[in-house]
Image (cartoon, rainbow, N blue to C red; front, side, top):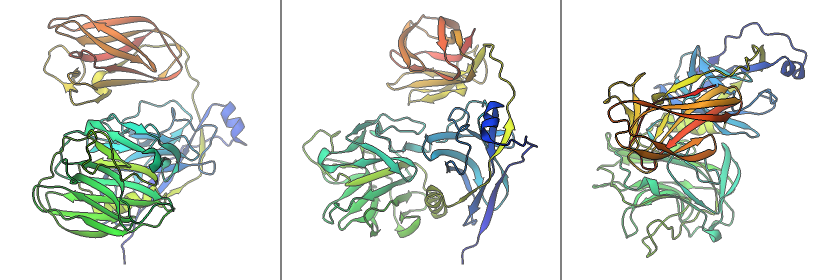
Length: 482
């Protein structure tokens, strides 16, 4: 018999006004909050930094107040990382819970009021996170470039999913995974095959080809007769793990784990381990792109073009992780994705203080932003920076720094960037959705402030993004000033 423990997410609610209806609350500028209870099924070991999806519909939330700009979660006074997956219905968000164990954790989900900037859910252990939107976007911290072909966005297990049509060669190509190496790996994804799927074909969830032959660097999917399988190629012996046959028109979760340190691999279907055993060797590193929903079998086509194994069905929430997840983790991931672990408490309303509509100066340190790419990181070598460091050097294609300004009052601002550049440089600067090419004058060994006047910002959150063109700059902080 499985032991059961209860993780209760309690909310310490202050006395709230007794509103006779939501319309009155909206007129009074109110916010809303709820209590969640997570049922921890297997408390043998804590699950640390676990991303939990929550699903909010009209029975679980106040829809008139539920907006992505104001939704957040906290434990006590500590804000928790949050990502909005789908606006719904249902409204789907990911919350990074610090620890799921047999203890009580206080947490608040709240919306309708102004909030601080959110921090990312997906850390560097997630090499890629695809929520399977029609554009094939990677939602992980690396924001890997992906190219999608002939995908149709549908409702999935976790908000949005993508339907694939083999005749149209539906596929996502991820060229930025070229030569990405790892020692541990967890590959996972949700797949729903159509009735038209044949028992003679392979259907790939995710793969990367190792060479010009039929060897895959890594792969999960189904093989004849529609049986789940997975494998990672190593420099020694690593057997293919095989699961059960998958029923059509039903969503199934497939996960493959390679644990280099413990010399083991395992395949999971719908949260349960079906094939596990000894495995050994260092995973091979390929110089090929990765594919989602399709594959390559050593054809004469260019290496970034698939040649078969197209999914006849749909995919949702595909992930590539550089951590070997435990059986407890995979099981809880499956159950939480099906919304089986949370009991949603009633909605409570609270007053929101009147908002001051006077524009104010807001400065954000660059190291508090989101740096994406292999040639950009938080650094401390240069003297004279403010805060905990600066972000540089923007040396590789795709290097990006995004700084978010929450709760901006609509108005005209001076945009200021404190930066360093040994020589004159030019890089892309995006103010929300408007992009421009921005020169940065040489500063020698000093720091300088670039001022861009007359920047119109809307009410709410605004994001300033610097993308590498010429690169080779260091950013200390970004400021908006009326």
